[in-house]
Length: 293
Image 1: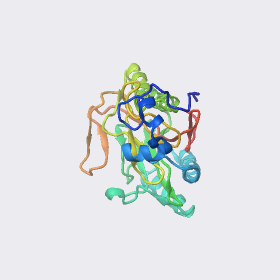
Image 2 (image 1 turned 90 degrees about the horizontal axis):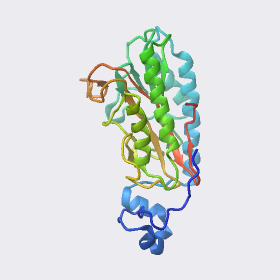
Image 3 (image 1 turned 120 degrees about the horizontal axis):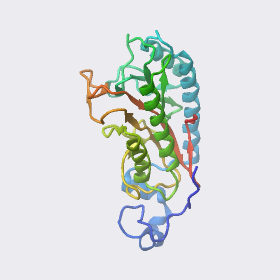
Image 4 (image 1 turned 90 degrees about the vertical axis):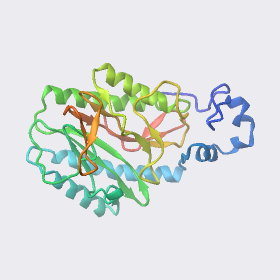
């Protein structure tokens, strides 16, 4: 975790988007009385209250219990529909709702993406094979609050390419989260991911990005996994969003299959993803869906 100044600097760009310096804009204006109102008006970003953060944290705790149990299931011979059934039943048993089910027509309660599938894989009759990599992406709604996270797992014994892409994807998320602090920008987050992943000879998917989350499935802001330092929205305490870099071993280009959901690499290369729900705190960040990277 990085320690950064909580307050926006006097000479920093004002977070309201006016392109004026903070000292000449909201710092000495009535608009400063509510940074929450400013972010909602300018960016449609909801800065979360302590009550909302606690609700998201509880949803995140449930998510991680389920994801940890899924990890124990992963083995050659497992049918992806079994993952869906387990996630659905565990979510309902906890008094929660699986957010993906029927979201914009998505037919299942979890996304299961194998090998060259970048994201939004639909569980079904596909059987996991030794050497596969599989991403499981879970989003429960508990008491009206959403948390969102995913991990990529090895199935059986991984080959060298599988080890490489999973390692790079995990490190990409770690570096992206470490760039989060008050006063940093979304461009800092994207740059941290892009510069690392591309430096390792991999590519970063552009079409799918992280997003605000907590009181809805997908909120503002969009969190690009590529970008330039110092660009984009300034991060302030109370922002909650996912960071979920999708990293391809080959080129970044993709296409979506006829089911209108499953996104795959054009060149058939492996793709891996890790995702956590992140809160901007007073002195850095907190993962509300924490796991080791």
